[in-house]
Image (cartoon, rainbow, N blue to C red; front, top):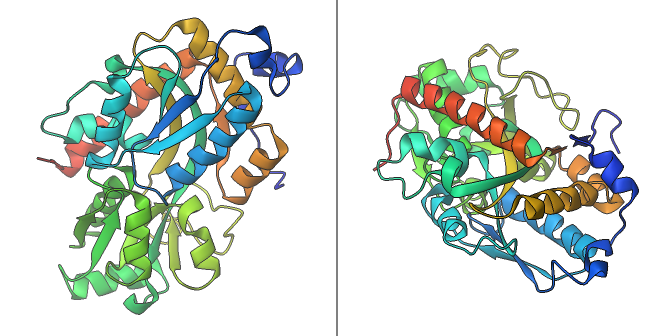
Length: 328
């Protein structure tokens, strides 16, 4: 495992882990006494889907109960999280979401059907994920500077795929347009998996993506990595410069995954589930996979995650306003 990566366990999780072992939750004869359901609000094949299934398998071991992962794609994650909002707040239905549906969509969508900060109970952040700009080899560029030059020479011809309107990849593409002064066309999908499939097929040329999704394709030469949209290079792709190093310091955006429950879920259940997730990310097979994918485990308390969501929502509101994005 890369020694530079670490799991961040806040609020005494280490102490909780010291007295807990896989299957301990089931030993008291109480919760959980039936299968749990985790809704991923995006299509199969994306980074959220893969990471949720990894965490779900770990939860099944830790809780001693079956964990079922369901994909409910649509509206950039809003449709699936809407199912979580309408579910019973009994600890048996959870949502696994990227940043977009929780903190971006409310500021872009014209008719948001719920308020993520009020109608969902924050459970914990799970991972932080660097974003990276990639291109199909047929675009014929190997650097961010070359891409900008090509886009300026051919305005409106290049397009970029995203996981859907109001997702971080969408916001990242719009930010790239503004910072580079280029005209590229947004093509939304119902998840990063379908967007990646079309990118690999050359149906779209560009994508701002979670590194976890595209790293294997970069290594295989199926995609070209142009820049990391963050403050530092990533150890998995040390040769890829940051956007700032490539001449676009304003092109900075990041993604993360988190778990939520329906509003009204008892605090004791939220804490219990959060402690279980803290144990999951310490499981050797889970920790190794997170590290291999280029992500970083981040386990916070429900209160800390609530504060984080407030901050992220405010940051997204400012960026959305500056970019002038609207979604009917």
